Length: 312
Image (spheres, rainbow, N blue to C red):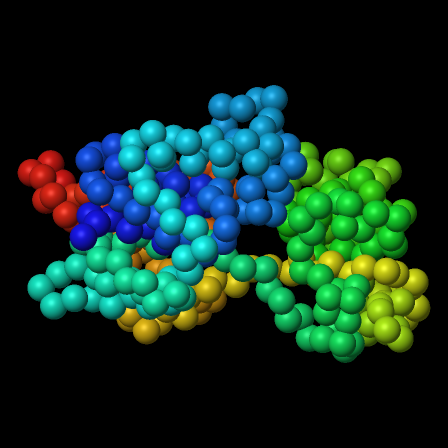
């Protein structure tokens, strides 16, 4: 039996596992994807992150993921990738059994949930389903995927702005479409859009059209109430993330109306022995925040298992 099993190998999960193992708890990370590192590695590996405290010159997502993984392994954390957890069941007398999608089972005294969120993959725009994978996507992993193409990015948050900037490195043109009159992203990030990306405020995508592939989008301006057809090769919807918390509903963990895991300041969930950290808890979704929450969750798990006098 492991002392702690962490579900998810992103910044929150790796930080939690590192601190748990450093306190001599036998720790395992179960990661659904083929590599550790989470979104920094899987989504923006080549992007320079300039808001991670301690790295004023910036550091790429890949470097962040690899450094966090190296730190965790230094203290003996076991990491198993391609292991998607499908069920978490409490045991009589304490502890939990976790089952992955291959049927393998793992025992733990405490569990830390850190599997983040997944991009929203259904917006409801007419024609969206027809062109999914044929011009419609929900994330951009590499600028070369839109090399020479006419691109529309839909959204107004950090992910949308970052995606538009990434696309502009290779695309023939990039337009950022946002239904409101201002963007939610950091001002420093928005400044980089100037001269690189055309922003269409108060605008929505009403319909997607084409034959075998996406060819055009019908746009609608909410202020002028005018519609027009826009020639486009790729539309990337960046309109939020959803927590993949179905397994937690079965366990009985309390969730918010948005489906996020409800935790207290110790990162404790409504189930004794189950903790949560990172994007899955909502709040400020930043790497620094995820790391901090992971540390708190691991120390709370330590107190739960060892029950030291100072943990009271």
